[in-house]
Length: 146
Image (tube, rainbow, N blue to C red; front, top):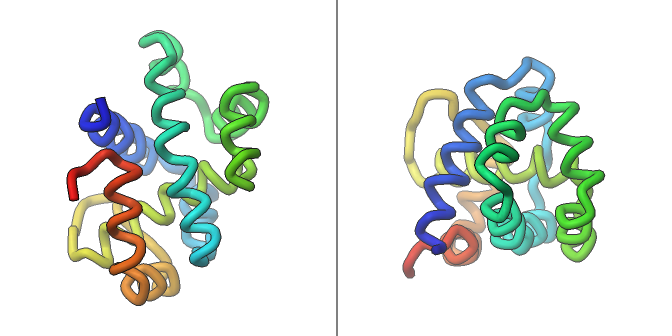
């Protein structure tokens, strides 16, 4: 099942990035990664992925078409996603901005160039400096084999 999470999470992330508003792009660029925050995001990712997979195809399609404000409100107001985020010390905004910020910084730090991938120089430097610690956790959270 975990191997299913990676393509779904990546497709949702890339699809979301391609249609980002300038404001949303700036939020990602302004997001400051720290080890504590990266660990919180990574810890929440498997549960949030499982939650998204538990939604009906119609609900996932609707979520994919939601505006950033709707996505934020839906994530914050859904009891399941709100509980997951609370357990991990995150707000909906921190998660929805932080995961793409971390994902793209990881991709750039690992030398995976791709269209629509961007990150702040500070976040890329943070990931590069901590890649040995972050990479195994990130891979495990995304269901990738070691």
